Length: 208
Image 1 (cartoon, rainbow, N blue to C red):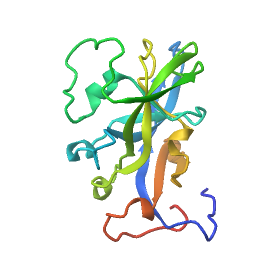
Image 2 (cartoon, rainbow, N blue to C red):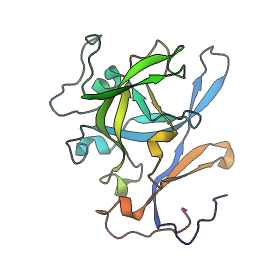
Image 3 (cartoon, rainbow, N blue to C red):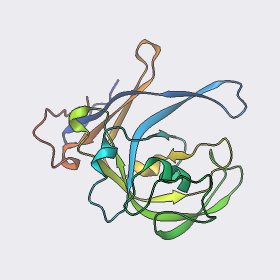
Image 4 (tube, rainbow, N blue to C red):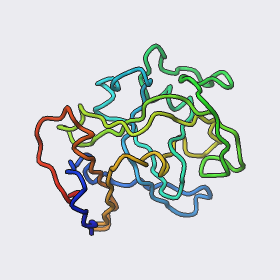
């Protein structure tokens, strides 16, 4: 059941509508785990919006509510899944060690997590992070949620992408998880103020 908002909350627009979780085998292969998936777009920070072609079916990233960091990915994943201006798609089996197609702005030490067995120092790269929509009328209007990404070399058989709670701090985005008919899904509502270019659409003061 959705929590009732206060009178000071903004109007919300349904942006991701009941996107199914993804089932996958755990590291030992002994059982199936389910990931919350969200459509995520990456672009250079100098670009006002991701390329239109990428808005139709953006890659899906797992959202781990237990991870307190932001967004993590590998250079290989960016090459394979995103159209970055001036950066060709990756057709090589490997990339030069230490190469990343976005400018580095700082670094951060990460503890062991879902992508690594031991603590590592990782570079933080400047970019724009957008959430995409699975609703056709909303797909031309991506919502920017972040301005930096952690780039790592992912260990074998580990996730190549990961979103944590910090990716959504300060956005006022709302999410709901449902288990209707035994099918887990996630829905996302965004404040009307985050979609200033969208034509007039019905809004909801209760997030759905």
